[in-house]
Image (tube, rainbow, N blue to C red):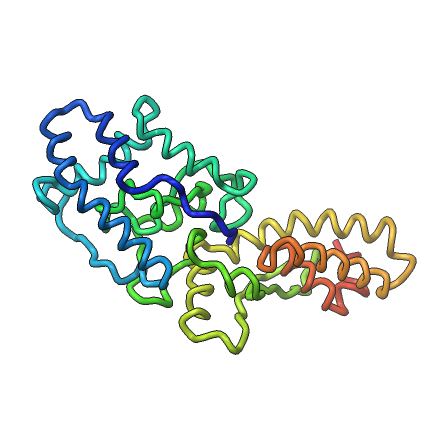
Length: 288
């Protein structure tokens, strides 16, 4: 995961922009009646994000056609996102573009590898329609991360995936993503989660939930396979005559460089595993 600053646009400002794009007078009036509710929802979301309690909001399982707040139907709340925030011709689109463009180097902060091309609802709008256009609930994401979650949501603290706007500190500073080298031909990498032993159980569960819900193990292994092909070719061409010590030194240097960038990147985990594998350093990189 990559850390992100929280969006500067407030819930109230976002609502104002979206409402300004509504042509239907009745819908505009009914949505405006919810302005205090939207503002409160934004404050409550922020407080829950800071304390790690976003799982505690009640789920809305009502049918789309039912009134859920004030005089507004569930589908009308959900459609605020699709028709008045995403739609390029609407004023609310400026908020969408601002959040999307804030992705670090254009990379999805959820996985750290995909290209951020859309916004993901951390709490799905199908279950939490009041948060459908809340900036704090909208995270730049790649297609894989956005479609992989669908309408999944956490019911406990430990089931929550990591939130780029709130979950900093230990989740970024401590290493919890690791890998092991599989003695296959050619060599392959398998990723796993191993948080520090002194972490609270709930925090351990959260990084595992993040890893599993986004299918990061499978996705990282595919990326590692491509990277290994290049690493093997380079080692065979330039280092094979020097011996396993030189191979390990090179891999250790790569490990330190990657760890200095992101403690929990797939490349840091991969190089650490390669450097620690006697089999790979001695003969594994030569197998095809």
